[in-house]
Length: 334
Ligand SMILES: [Zn+2]
Image (tube, rainbow, N blue to C red; front, side):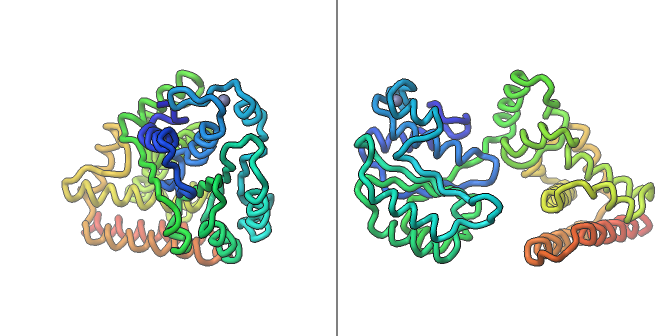
């Protein structure tokens, strides 16, 4: 092994095995949800491909290529990403990439490009890239990185070998987070919180010290149900949260309620024992059908946030809290 992160070990073995057997293709699409370290994996693999004396699937760390990479610049590696203050990868960047591949390699090994996130390429950029994918230069290696591969055009998808990264199970994720905490004792203990998502996304939330989002949301939902908090106050509590993350948290918490209501174990959340009990208490008072209906509202809220740039997050949130309050208060009095 030595992939950048332990949950990438299988993919690393697969890729380094292809390299060792000289069966590496020209184009790969690394996909999987956000927070799995796909970009770090692509860069580490580029380092292995460019190394002049790799040993046991590892770059040597001492050759010219390894030194250039450690210094942050290798003439045979190009990273294509959104440029400052822009939200897309434009055609001029792909044209530069085509010029990059037209030059001979500096060290006789591969020339590698990492495009991340690939789904933000404009249509013109994607069309230009397609020409490159149709007739890749002999030593070209393209690594597209995306957590929304569905947004890539089918012609590009069909020309890349897809490699999907999976998230570790909860025990493995928690063990990794424990290791992070050993290195940084200031980090809060993940085991006492409700967790969701991929390890690096969880770590970023823990480091941000803003308090565990799912726990705070559960507090709010309970307080609204107990009539301790009005709709507007409830919304105000979360005014500082990222709205998309909050809507995702709503979906996961309400999905967990549906699952508990039906005697199932929540699949997408890590729940400490105390949280299971709190959610179970809440679920026992709610009707599955209405919970499912509420999930539709959450879906509508997400669609609104994605589609219209003019929509105010606070209104979407107040609306969700209003529906929550109406549902839980109806159930309680029923
Ligand atoms: Zn090396």
